[in-house]
Length: 88
Image (cartoon, rainbow, N blue to C red; front, side, top):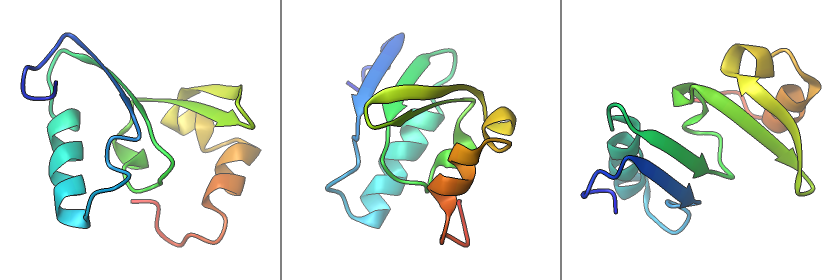
């Protein structure tokens, strides 16, 4: 699906079972798709800084939807990154 460059791309944890190098390659390909809608569900923090919009879910409930800057002002951001020195 990624190499066909669809107009809309929906991915659920696409890199969960990949090693770091392959994961970075795949995520960079997703990030660099121009003029495409991408909705990527991730459980990891490594690509957070590349997101235009954040939808944050807790216990299967959408508790936040907004920009990265807005998200960083919420308690969800603090909880999500607690104990993690680097978010990139």
